[in-house]
Length: 197
Image (cartoon, rainbow, N blue to C red; front, side, top):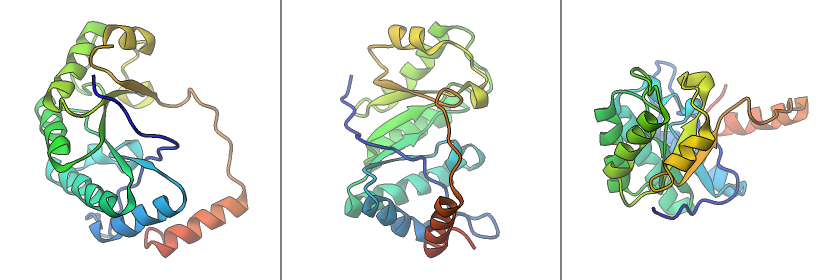
């Protein structure tokens, strides 16, 4: 198993889109710099917030590449969510991430032919790990999106040789509403980056 070196908060980043829904790669360097300047050390690219499940494999690769390039000047740890469907695309993305210099992988379970047992899920994650053996692989346990309800403790026990860790999605963690002042500060920063109007 490969060591997982990310530390601190790891926000899931948005995939910036133009008005015509094409990807605005040009704002990613400024977005990365803003996060790094704000004390962020690691980011998750392609999580639910990044909407990668709605992008083509080619676009997902370009987004990953843009973040990896931005990391060279910001020092950000780049974790990429590669899971989904079909498995061949997941494996292709995992290999690509290793080749371009991402730091770690996160994988959802198969989303169409969902694993029906913990063993099936561990097998799936092992295929991702084999595709990128130099990267740590974490399992993304988010039943609200994946509809895979396997309890995550047995997944970790069964997959200890391949799974470096697990990200447990909501509603496992309590959420607190933002104050109106915090919302205004965030909106102002997003406008500065060209991510909001």
